[in-house]
Image (cartoon, rainbow, N blue to C red):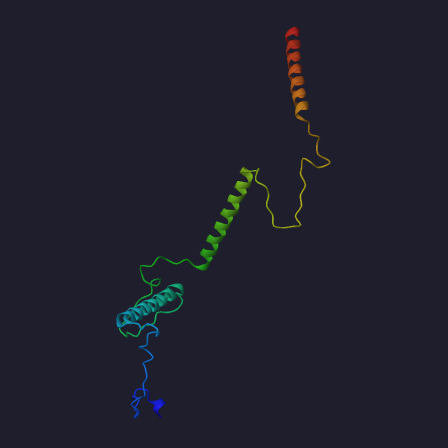
Length: 167
């Protein structure tokens, strides 16, 4: 029965019986003061309030709960001064126009910058170079191109000389 009521002191008739307090001993853990306990309580209340605000901010789909029967509000989107809302057809049309504009911009960049390579995600897509194919016209080298230019200049000079001689 004594263990059921720890608030009752210990009564003994033996004058040599001694005991020491568990909480006041030298090796006891330091006890928190009244000011520290109040500061801790306030800090925990602040943390709980911040957690509630964070949840309210992160989950706008959760409604506002109040216990005040006189609290009232009106919908921001249904008010008379709210901007006109678009219906789903206009929204779909706008989305399509923006997709078309993005596709045209990509085509314009591809056309204006042929040095940019073609990027594909299809591993089976293949292509061959127009200039390196077997049926392509043979490309002349730099030396051959210089010789052709010189020969055409000589032919043009001879033509002019022949016209001058004939007339």
